[in-house]
Amino acid sequence: MATVPQATPQPGATVESLAPAQPLPELKLYGHSSLFYWWPVWMVGYLFALLTYLQHETVTIGGKDVWIHSSKNLGVLYTVVFTLVILITNVTLRGLVSVIVILFAMFVTVLFAWLGWWDYILEWLPYLDIRMNLGFYVFFSTAIFIVWALAFWFFDRMEYWRIRPGQMTFERVVGGGERSYDTRGLVFEKHPVDFFRNTILGLGAGDLRIMTAGARHEEIMVPNVLFVDRVVAQIQKLIAIKPDQLKEEVVTAGTPG
Image (cartoon, rainbow, N blue to C red; front, side, top):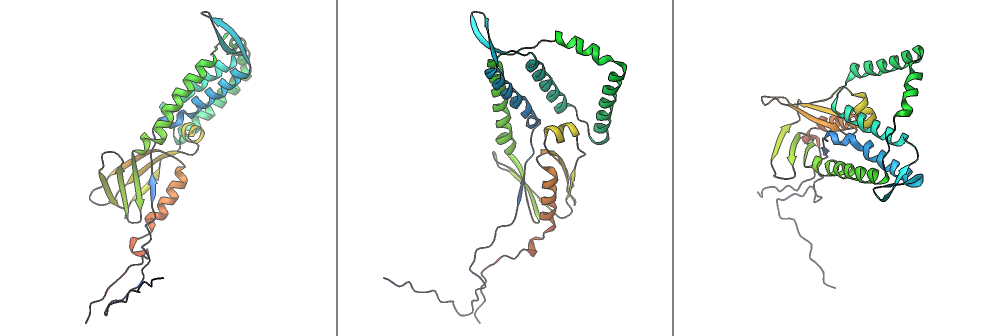
């Protein structure tokens, strides 16, 4: 077996370490479009498609047999879910306003019960009959899911923020181009929570505002960040680290002499 000769350090050279430098810790920050909040539309649609398949009645329309659920409640509920998602994703109620709306809804509910108006409303509801067949639930839910998945997993990730100790960079996957900011003096602020959008539909998502310091002062909005509280905590830890505090192992060489 051949013996490989060992390298001998040259006179005047000192080797502190031959280990590779450790990569800097970093965090990628993604913002999402409002389509992220549309997951209940396709999820409830698939659930109702399953219920229609298991408890269907066959109805002949135009010479073709279609499967429709025996209860009208599915169509009514799906219409309500679809309408609420449109309303919540387009009307923003933050902080105290959100609490006021919730309290007002509770007050109206109790008031209607005290006046006995719910009896008249419930008497009118039986005349509301909305029915959708199995094909509608499957087709519409699949179309919404494809759009939602493309937005969430692909289009929303074409632009992102890379945050490292000492530096924050805005990057684009397509087209290139970067913008860098010094993390000294950066302020990360979470917007007040919209209870309906962030808590109910967003499952902890929220809008993040970034304010830069220095001569090039900018205010940057990153919408609909998932798990925003945890993300802010991680960012605060990263920007608190100074790059010169990180111990990177390097190879240094002295000058003979």
